[in-house]
Length: 224
Image 1 (cartoon, rainbow, N blue to C red):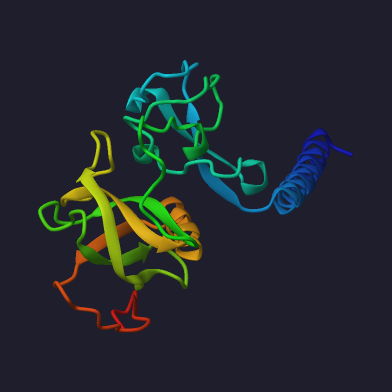
Image 2: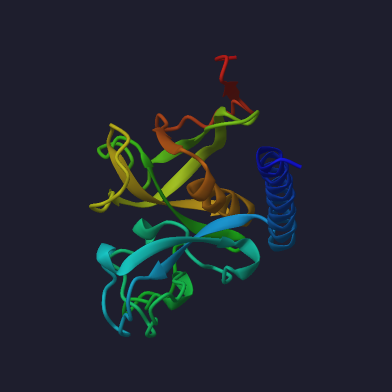
């Protein structure tokens, strides 16, 4: 066999073996992803944070991890923790959530009824209109895939508290507001997921006394 032919044969074998190796790696990665399950955003500490100190934006980072490894109640949006005082120390890389927030003196709990929750969200909204006592509708916009589009997710939700979004919040070209909403447990879980996976949340103030329900409304990429 000539030297040139031998080189061509060796090159062909190398390409075949490389393709097999890449295919095997892809199969292994797919198997690992299947075992770990879906991933979520979790807020973690950039460095050790002492108990009793108020949390700053520079203290926090967002880490993507399998949902099975996220602590119950772990926050997915840093803005909901900024300015809060920690009840216990958090080590570098530790997950943060409402369970680690120190209750203010004299505060017995949020003004919600049995079965309700006070859900923290950060979204687009008119700061002069999204105020305590107002009622809003919540729009959720997603990108990519068959689920892309905007839907009317929640209707006639009471605003318990509102404030300008903290510095460092994502800027989508409009006013952003951090709001505490009175919702059911199911809706609180939905909002937490939406803050992680949706591109945008928008709070639409309702007229005083307007209790009308519009039902499910969703607009896809084709504006239908």
